[in-house]
Image (tube, rainbow, N blue to C red):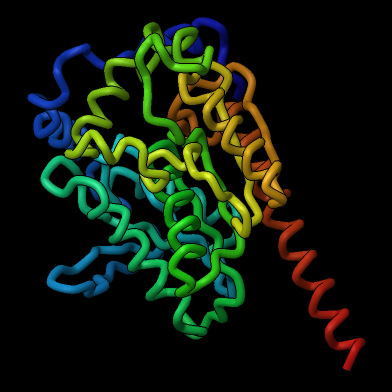
Length: 322
């Protein structure tokens, strides 16, 4: 069922109250949790686990497709501006993702700012990926290829994990799917990206809100220049994963996401870039009946299928050369 013009207008006008998020973030977390109760467990095949890293545990939740089988793995990082959201609030999204793509989806409950500012949440995400890819089996499922995926702040974290993986040399990320990622560090009127001013006031995600999110995530203003905060600032983007970049037409993050994809491509990486027409920030969490969501899954599955086919052809070539 496509989004009609009246519904689209309503969704675009669903902006958060422009209060100082630095004072209201705890209330907003409670509202998010209240709006997304964890009622899926009796109805879906999931598994909760914790991964020990240093002196703390990182909760993760695995979502399995309905049908039994051997499936590849996705590691999912949720959005929420680094400040809100959790594995419960994204359970419906991850359940849908598992069934629509035929992947096991591992959702990471990384620590949130401002109690845990940069780089603590990022280090949680990195540690989970490192732990997973260091093993060759997960519930007897081979982990030949792992896909990182995230939306908004979660897509920022996916991109930053890929950069860290290359820089530290501890593991390799094969491919990543970045859904309307935050990749830059300025959401004022001085931003070089037209979409910030075009879409930064009358839509779901505003300039003020993004500025507040960053101020909570980054406790030291000097870190705003860190490419692990703003991947678009990275001087070297070589040896990055095969990337699917999906942006939304009516999103203030649209142009910086596109710019990051183009910069990855210019550095010699394999990149696919798509913009979803008439979509707003956060559209991926809408029910799958919406055309924007249908289109997004078509693009994602085509990207994943191509990767599977490329791997199959590579293995065939290796066998033939022996």
